[in-house]
Length: 122
Image 1 (tube, rainbow, N blue to C red):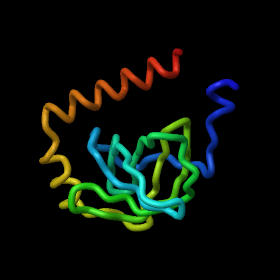
Image 2 (cartoon, rainbow, N blue to C red):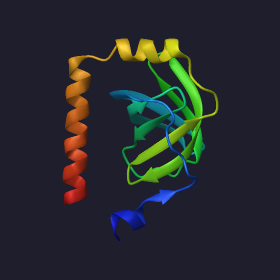
Image 3 (cartoon, one colour):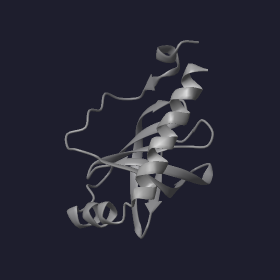
């Protein structure tokens, strides 16, 4: 199966605002239970999240740091999903998340991208 065949788009969704690049631990809670995930990027309207195994969820709560919001899965590709939040998160939440990003988080993000590329390329 090619990468394009593996990619499923549930609705057309394009981001309308810039995203903060991250690689921080988060929790996703959906109908299939609670799962540890990695929050890869974040905007006021949505996020990109990496799961440990291919996700089956269509919607759920995303929690990181002291923040939580509900979102619908608008695209999925392998272990990654794009969430569109039901309510825009505040600029303060974005700023607080951004302020806590460390050099270690940036390094972890780069390592995750490298691992994902290696996995895709075989």
